[in-house]
Image (cartoon, rainbow, N blue to C red):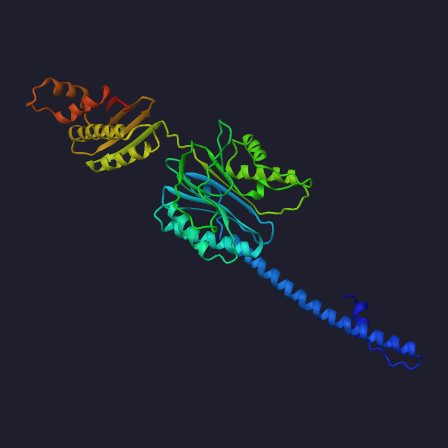
Length: 439
């Protein structure tokens, strides 16, 4: 309020004697002062109430956003890249997303859109997020059961008749298998580097909160290495420009076709920038949410090396087995091939220790493996005393079944499982090499 207005309101109108017109004017000024005081008092109350409501909504917005995960990219896991974006149309919104690990191998992901906007939709969104997270963690990785329980609870406790479209999935980050359910949500898009984006166009049930679900049957798909799973709400594809034109799913797919090499964070950023170029100054009428998951290339290293120092017992064989299994975890080598490899290595290294050592520990044993398309090339070197494994195998094979030679049974096993076995003495080292065909 200006100083002039405040002066007028607080100025006492003097008693005026004279004509009836002047007295009437005085009464009018007094009435005006009274009405202005009442108006200003009401305005202060309304302003205070509005500020309190805005403050409470601001707190509600912060609480709502705090429920959503904000971890970006490699900070989340070394085995997967993930990025997210959300922009409510109002202070609080009805969109949701979530992701968290159920165990070391399984990542839960979800995105949803509650009907309506504002505080009511936000509260329903918060309930849906909390329920889904709780039921998923207690359903033993059974996504069907988690969705059934969440939808049933929302149906039974939904006086305002809200509902939520939802996509939920469990991604095995080691095999890249995605098990998922779509409850009336926008189709996710699989973005691959070497092919066009593909819609994951299956719907399994109506949105949650409408009707109690019948038996749900999930779907599954295997993602390729480096594929990106792009999830979004209709606030993105149904955003309008000033001419009332929609952004559309087709335009989104066309855009993603040009951005296949970007990481999740870059991809989301570029999509939103292109959306702003499309909508320009048009108002945002719906919440916009995006979630992008990128499987990391799991192509194994082709070379394996393990060096063992000061070997004075066979306890280290456990370490050899563990390291071998870790190296071939994502290889095309079958479990049978890996099992045979471990058997051969254990036998040869045992012979190295038993017959190549002296009273002192073997200073060094080194294992090198070259992973080829159809076979494994393996070399073992050690600093023990000379021991010709290849010759020992020949002797074992040529003697009678009852004759005993050094490591006879084990060496016969090595001879059976390998090819191109060779022994050399290089300086003060033994060198054994062989080939193991992949099964």
